[in-house]
Length: 582
Image 1: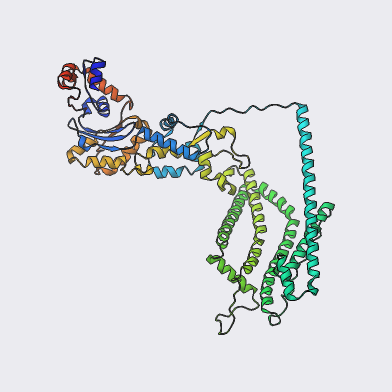
Image 2: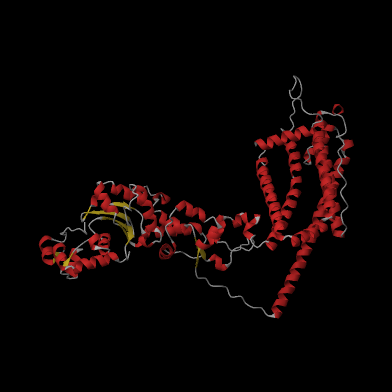
């Protein structure tokens, strides 16, 4: 460098120094003899101690994180957050995000938790809109619109014809299957038992009951299809029969006794449905009266009515959540809850309560070990679906009334607001605006970046380098390690002048975070503050300003600069040591 300056630029003299020490000099020449300089530079962050006007290079510590790594980290976070973003984000743009939108949190974990509050999230989320070209929508003439409408009508007619043709083909296929099944059943008297079983298996049936079930199902499907084509309403289904329920066990075989248990369960389920149906009919009869009374109560005392409505909604929400949790446990047939319920069902299906102690020779109840037993269990579980629908309808009714009459109850307070599309992970990426999964993001939203938790995550690496996998201590711990290298008196002088300089020092909140964190590593004093943390007046320019101040001091420059004559005599590697250099 000296050779270039002297030979190419013909400078009369030159001196070398450390930029952050020049910044320290620019922020008070009288205070530059003692202090700690935190140089948050472009590539690295250095902690430089200066004692008695001398820089102790042997105690300087470096953290491999600065402005450029922070910009790269911001870029990687955005790329992972928006892997299908239509535009390529540059390092210059990520640097702009770092400079304009990041800040250092006073309490990182607490600040991170505050982002989960939708109201606070709105104030902290930054939406970066990238340029895009909106498509030009061509306005169609009336003739063109009429032609398209006629085309759509014709397409609809063709689809209807295709659907009718498909239904007819399906009906013909089912009629053919019914003929085959009926013909097979008619062969039963003419075949031996072994031949009959072989013929059933060749047609894909387990036994004769399976064949009868297929005939019944196919015949019912054919009748429904024909009635639908003719516009005939379906007749009410015949009530199911349970012929084995009233027959004593001693008159039944082992297989029939097992079937009886299933029929008892199905009968109990059917009776419960009938009772629920009757109750539902009674409920529908006075729904209008309830609605009228509800309106009168609301108009008479709105506040009391709202309080009761909130209580009803809370009770219903708790019930739905509890059922959902139980259903998740019961979905696993090996879970403890599922096994307990299966045992309860088996006990209910038994004619007599099980004895407390099983006697020797008494058959053990094996109900539930066969997969077919669990099919009955699942069929009973389906009865809960209708109840779930009623609860969902009732909850929706409560919430619609609250949205209409309670100004403090907002859309985000509804139970549906906690679905995945409205979860933190969703608005972390797409914001809190309305979102319809069926429609997707608009073109404008597709070109948007939401910068939220990244605002504190990127600068937090200075204090927690492990966030990006750096095996180094944070800034405060590094400063603590540097201070340990000096005696108590020197430490006291150093902490009274902690200067933060460099581009990263411009990030809001950095000085306050350092001021708060350093207190924890210093001795307690109730008299006065033993330390001072300050930022450079011009974090980016103070290095130049300090060097300019030194250059204007001609007497000092003569002592620390290398002249052309000295360069020619000692060579380009010759420099002079001074308090601002290395």
